[in-house]
Length: 306
Image (tube, rainbow, N blue to C red; front, top):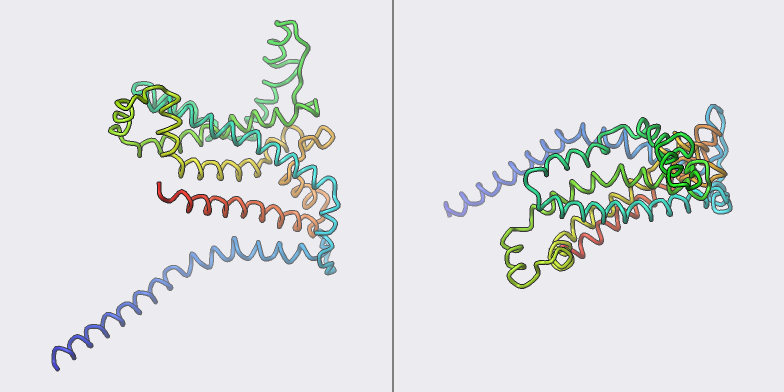
């Protein structure tokens, strides 16, 4: 009987201690939770509510329009143009930056002496201010005074001005996007390559897999599948968030050829002062970003066996 009483007393003490620890955990995490609610959850909730109104910045009154902003959005050709441009930009930037970074990472992983130097060189664009570097790129890709213009003139070719030509402006922005993103993806791939042991590489070489492309296809890339999924989704999110280069170089032009979704949100909300309609655009944008995040989780669970 004494043994059972002591056991029950010990269990009660453990339960009481667990309750006390849980209470302390809630108390200590409360400031971070409240900060998260105040800075993330509450603004998103406010944006969703405003999207159902006709509110304009600076106006003291508003009217509830229900789904009016979303109905207008579906029939807005400028919205569909911005969404199409964002999708094309993402389709260009993401594959090149992901697979280019994978190729460079495999090459750098085999180097020993100069590896750190190349890592710094490729990572520098990530640390640079994209707004300032956009001005540099506007000079480099200028069809009249930039190095590209002099190169084409020396070859006897006509000048090409990327940001003045509606058919090339999006390609010019994509070049800057790849340049800015490939270094970040490279570092993530190099981190993933550290998981692949040298024994696996030696075993694959003994099995006859000594070619660069064979090792990349049958050994390196399959083992980097989880890393590739994360990098792919993060690259999609960052590509959809393009704003700086558009605002500095093209302002959505020429003739809407480079109008992106995030830039349109900024223009409609803060330039045209149509906060209600801009909030509806923001909700659509958040849904797209959330879809990318859910895609990452779903693909990550499918590749969990790696």
